[in-house]
Image (cartoon, rainbow, N blue to C red; front, side, top):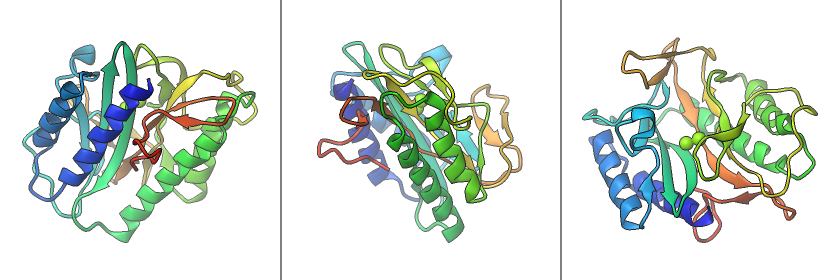
Length: 243
Ligand code: MG
Ligand code: MG
C-alpha cells in the first residue's frame, strides 16, 4: 500500500506544478494516467462504477467527483484533484485542493482550515481510540471556524479495494464507534464548504456541487493506524504530505 500511495503522491505533486490559468482538466487527467501507468500501476478511478477518467477534477463550487473536460482553469479558481492508484492489488487514495493563480484570502483560509482538520484527524488515529474521535476532530475544527461539513460523502477504509469498511464520516460523536486497531488503513478526507453543507449531484450523475454555489475544499490522505502512531501511506519519499 505504501508503494501504491507513493505513486499517488508523486502524481499529485506533478499535477500541482502543472496547474495554472489556461490548463484544462482533461490535460491534468492525461498527465495523471500516464504517470500512474508508467509507474506500473493502474488508475483506480478509471472505470470505477463507470467513471470515465483517472482523476476527479472539481472546480470551485464543485465538491468532489468532477469529470475532467475541456474546461480551462482560470485565475482565482481552486481545483480539487482526487487520485487513486492500484499497484499489485493494493490501492492508494489521496486528494488536494490547488489554487489557480492568485486566490482570495477567504478561499485560502478555507483551504487552510481543511488541511488543519486533516491533521486533527490524524492525531486521533491511535490504536484504542474510537472511530468517531477521528470524525469529531474534523467536525470540531471546521465548525468552530464557521465552515460546514459535507454530510453525504465521507472517508472510508482502503486496502485491496478503494472503498472498504468502515465509512469515515467527517462528523460524529466522540468516544463512540469501533475501536481503531493496529493495521487499519483509512482514507480520511474532509470535504468542507464555505457556506451551507448542502450539496446536489449534477445530471452527469457524478459531479457533486454545493447547493448555494459557494466554494468547497477537499484534502485526503490514506493513513495507517500503527503502534508507532499514524503512518501516511500517500506521503512523498521524504515523508512529507502533498497538501
Ligand atoms: Mg479519493
Ligand atoms: Mg477516498
